[in-house]
Length: 342
Ligand SMILES: [Zn+2]
Image (cartoon, rainbow, N blue to C red; front, top):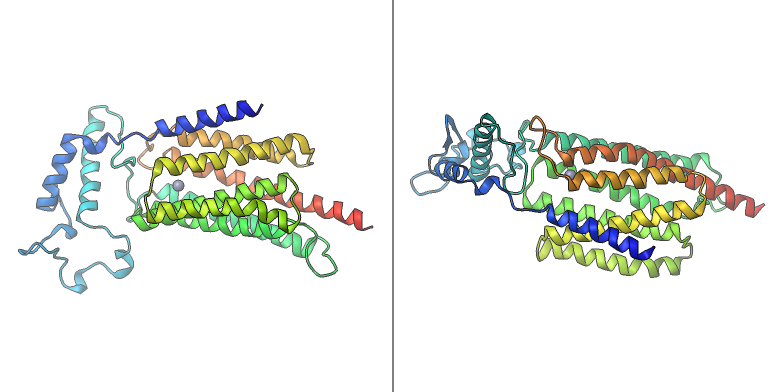
């Protein structure tokens, strides 16, 4: 059985690694020509960009301050290069579409249409919905424990995993917030924040899966399980941020942590006879199937909806079910503990 899991993990890993191929779009000679022209003339076809107007000494000429974009728009950091890349990509994709060719990736990303300067509007909207869903789940968990279920004489909840789920809720909301920011505009900073918060969330949920599935309740054992994992995740985040943003390595780390916790939950659901184990099953199987969307990376339909956006859509109902499982678990543990007290 254990061997089979390793094979499964290996297959999942190799699928993901092979999907990380180089982008065809930016090696296209016509696209390269367009970029070169644009960076000299500041125009693509009829369209010219403010950011590409240079003065005689080569400094960008954005005009007097009152003609510049307001500060609240400048955070997006659009510059000459990114304007040229975007409009050359659109021009090139239009030509390709007329010839009946399928979209290709440019600089590692599918061609998306911007909406009010937002790069991937659908992913932003879905990340925001996920954030709202996490908040709803976390709030209902908080209300259940503090107002609906009986408390211990010291006014603390009976459920032993309360604080862990609170930390989970905060990390999950943090992660969706940065996901929304990253999909609105990807620059180095937003990318690193998005990746780091996703890794932190994934690492913490792995700790939680181990602690819950193995019923680790005393503080010392919890520290023994969590410490090496926290050390590993922290090192990985520091490596990504300050040494090298290695996508391949990060993908492997994330898939390994993700698959491990899905397996832990799946096996636990099978052996624990938890009354809400069907919810766990749906989340595990659903989560696994949705991972396929990330592997089967299709181009955006109508310039907006790609596999990654659908992946973000799929986690909305799963999040709802997930928090519902957590609430059931809290109720179950509380009633078991109350029976013991009586
Ligand atoms: Zn995303």
